[in-house]
Figure 1: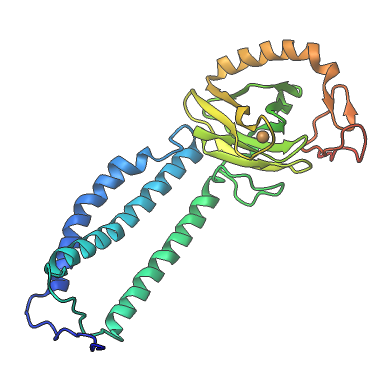
Figure 2: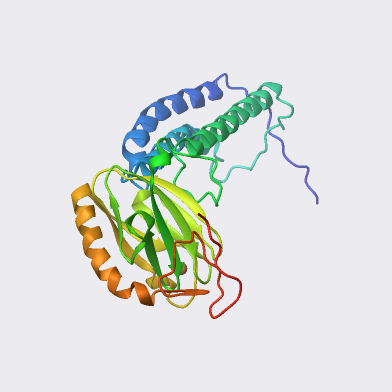
Amino acid sequence: MASEPTTAPPPTDSTNHGLRVVVGWIVLSSIATPLVAIYVGPLIPPGNASVQGQGQVFDNQVMTSLITPILCLMAVFFGYGLVKFHAKRNAAILDGPPIRNDARIQILWIVITMTMVLFLAGFGTYELLKDGAGGGQGPNPIAFPPHHQSAMQVQVIGQQWQFTYRYPSLGGLESNQLYLPANTDVELHVTSLDVIHSFWAVELGVKADANPGVDNIAFVQTKSPTTFHVRCAELCGLWHGYMYNNGYVVTASEFHAWAAQQTKLYAAIKPYMDRPGDKGGAPYARSYLPAPGGGPPPVRAG
Ligand SMILES: [Cu+2]
């Protein structure tokens, strides 16, 4: 025998459940949000090793602080519902009357979510543009950090399976070690000799695709001396997993000492340096084309 769906009578108790949920939400949020902002946000990578990295940590702090009240609302709402409205053991399962077209909730929901999304879009855009954000911007960047005109240029050349760093201001010195002076604006020109790689200087908050024939520019402003990790973040072949290294931010005098030592070492191998289409002591080019043994010449810039 088919039974009619059972519908519970409208609630008769005068308890204001909505008010209880709101009060519980406000109490939980006002405890949890500062704790998250102070203790959780700053722990999220990449850390404070560069101005761009510091900016990313701040952004993470803002984002986690904003989502904490939303998580608290969900937790209180579910918790309250589970405790207050769960079916009693062995009782018939009843369904309450449907609630439709509550204009207040609909408007409130649309206004709150739209405000948050628009605010975060504006905030994210501003933060991206402020310091160059540490990401690769292609050959024609639109977001410059302050003082970028005096930035030290370093070219990052990816190849299977290592990065080489080229310093045009040091006579085109090339090294497989990335040394950067402290408190300095650096303009990274990221490219590749062969396949696509991704240059990721983890703690500096820098990540830029390394593509053959492309000059991908990323900005970073170093802070105090530190050691950071460099990894390739694009699956680039058999030994991709071994394409990592340490980089160093050092004092100005340490940087000059390192540059002098590397210049001596580099002088011995420079005549044998081999770039596609340009054998032997290749001049500085901001990008290279993958044309070993022929093909079009490398793209020249300046
Ligand atoms: Cu790679």
